[in-house]
Image 1 (spheres, helix red, strand yellow):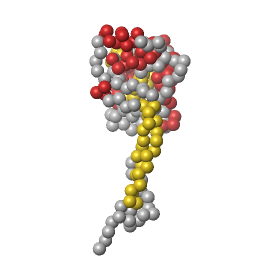
Image 2 (cartoon, one colour; image 1 turned 30 degrees about the vertical axis):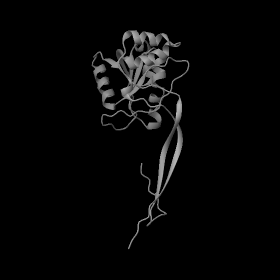
Image 3 (cartoon, helix red, strand yellow; image 1 turned 120 degrees about the vertical axis):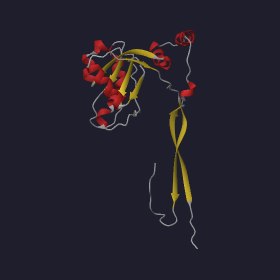
Image 4 (tube, helix red, strand yellow; image 1 turned 90 degrees about the vertical axis):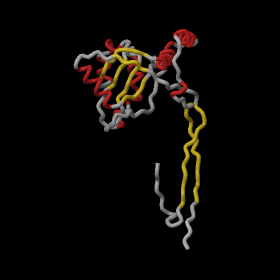
Length: 198
């Protein structure tokens, strides 16, 4: 008679994350509500970020690098900058997601959209971390799929005027306690072997 014994060790790894916000938490606001909310802001840049929840509509400017953005800085004012940067390596290319909003904000853009930092895409945005700079307007930013960035680049190269309405439901809340769960299951036949699954 054979018996299978299963022993599980579960660890909680503390981490700090902002409070999650479901899309259901967003709703349409009247112009009166928007005006009242914006009036409460001491910094108009904060209001611009919040406006993304209600929708920002602007013409698109497609660029392939920060250098091109600087050369076309006058064209970027009041527009949504779309970065269609080529993928070189993750380490080299991730700077566009990290600094894209700040660089676009420096030249007067109202928002930025960043081509996913990926060597391969199946029409799915690859999102991640980005950072603002304290002395630059904090504009809304989001990642878009490689296919969407390429499509807008083709349209732009043909001289097509692209206008995008950007609506976002993301908000930043103070850090709160959270955990990753890590479980270790020790087998009875080969307890010394380790297999990692994520």
